[in-house]
Image 1 (cartoon, rainbow, N blue to C red):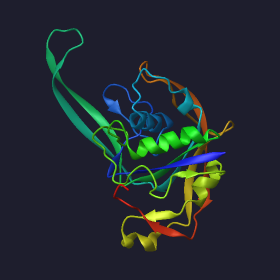
Image 2 (cartoon, rainbow, N blue to C red):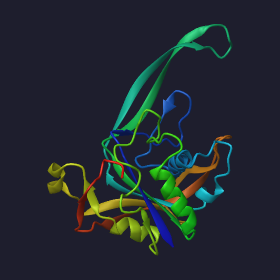
Image 3 (cartoon, rainbow, N blue to C red):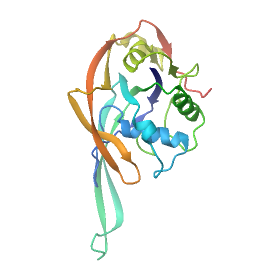
Length: 227
């Protein structure tokens, strides 16, 4: 197996799995549906196009920094009422993470597909974002020296990847262990974030397991400039 690693780093992120109408939630880590949406944007795929080649890849996330959860209240004015009798103001609650950093991983034996996705992340067809269009990336969604870890399964690739910092002031707080979420048939966590169709907005449930991995003593700095 091979694993493609994707840094997901930005000032604000939102990874909803059950957002409805005026309440936009966020999970504490990127969802598979949202990251596949990011891959589709990079590849230039439209909502109605086939995504089964992406959804069948095994997915996992390492939480390098959990960030802090916040909630905003927003008001939209002049919204047409459902019965068409006039306009009103609508208040919505929007949840997001600030200062979080993740490394997502997709495991596959299809090396050609992983290479195609990696190249697309380097030269995306559409603008990439972290769960919402207003949440841009601080760090490019790839590693300058290559994002594919050949002959490494998902767990191994996420565990062995060095911990990185944005500013040297973070070094004294380097963690020794990091939480990792990955797909497992008998996982104890159930989440509805496996996309079947983006155009129809249909999703299935999948199972996850949470483990903590020892961090490599190797430390590197994040590269914030595209290469």
